[in-house]
View 1 (cartoon, rainbow, N blue to C red):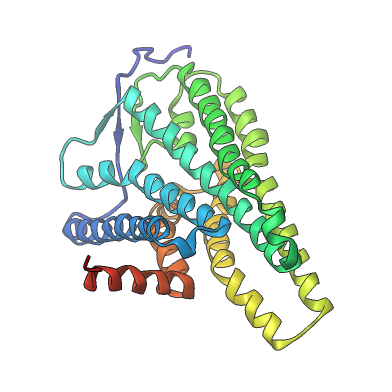
View 2 (view 1 turned 135 degrees about the vertical axis):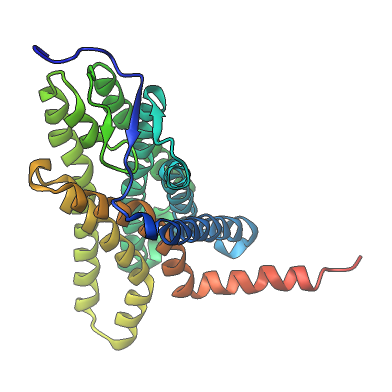
Length: 314
């Protein structure tokens, strides 16, 4: 900290995306439409699963939690981002920045763990179909939902507390559209080695272990299918797992490429673009992936709307 202005900052400035002023309104409309689509799409999935008894199964329990996680994950950053695009005030209070960082980590990690639970559910359904209801008992399903909430709470709190102990001097400009962990570390005038070690080891485990568990689940699924190869079995497995694999590819493709590489190797533009992918694009696409390719969801949508059009008269 020697030789630097040690005045503690009370707020940060979020520069947002590097968009030319003449295209500002166009991109504002685009991102607003994407956010509204994310909110409505994920809310629709949650409501359908709650209203339709046919969807009261382990897979849709996990899916409803994933939709809630996507909805909140996008809502952590998008409202402030959209506000800044239409405002000259780009500031966010210090406490607000740490709060945004906490919930960003929380819901990002939550989606990570829920994808593992969904992969295990598909593994049991395909490899042990006769024992599915026994293995995926209500007690296990509750455990697989509650455990991610507990783990993500501690992980997000760990990074937030470590960040809160750092000092920030005269530089308070964040070249990002939200309070990203790595961007804040670059602004700190304190020793950030402990933070970086925790990110590397704990953050790496949070990403790598769930990813490996998903890979193992699908390796066992593929092995099980190949033991008794049939066109019908392959089609059924693909229809069952296709949506989940698509979401896993979108989520981990950007996360691993960004956070498992040293930040010095990533340009600010690259980091921002990849952040848009997993904070804006992926939560928006998930409802389409799970509903358009899912006969159960489309059937539930028809049943719910048919009930509303043809109410039972007493």
